[in-house]
Image 1 (cartoon, rainbow, N blue to C red):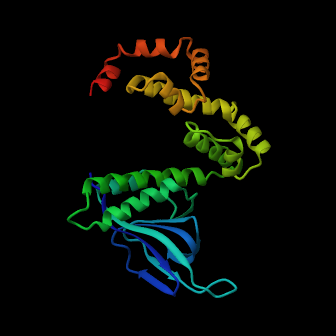
Image 2: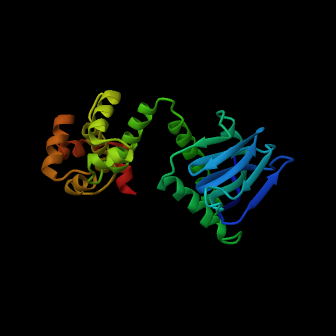
Image 3: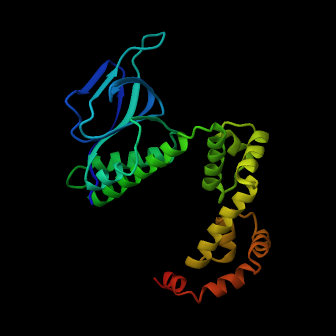
Length: 274
């Protein structure tokens, strides 16, 4: 199955602008407002679009975009990433769930990074663009957008804040981070974040960070040739002795014995042999 990227770009408008498909879009359209405001007509309604609003439309949907003067100063300001795509994989992906035409999502560096990589690859032109890479980047963007929509459309704001804490820990557990940073990311005070996470997940943020670090260490022990000291450091532990103590308490054996036993695994042995 194919995922074809037809157009991918970023646009910024400081003058009034209009783009209309009144007879229906010929392809899928994804548009993410990153700054300023705009107005969009789709599926029978006008929408005021602000930063963080994601528009997803299918072929045949009517579409009218207008960037106009707004605010007390009457300025025109609108920035967005957009792309047009098609393909059998996109058709299958679209049919998996009912997506709202307009969703408010959390914009993060990972999402923008995917979009920028698609944009840069497309700019290489037909003779230098790597079609296979573009295909996989587009699929990754589609799946990432689904996650963003699912997470940010939680009706329970408390559950959403707890999920934001969880995602921050997953991303930063293997490096040094402070609980205050996780709380700030979720828009909470430290005391509120600590209480909320424990009540939602039945463990502390530190306990979950330790789980993530141990899982990272297990992967490195099985499938890399790094020393145990290097594994401890790159998995987020402050010292090897601390890693040794935590690992033994969790698994009942030392890291060295665990690694020795894993060397008999055909999967692990094959991975190191390549």
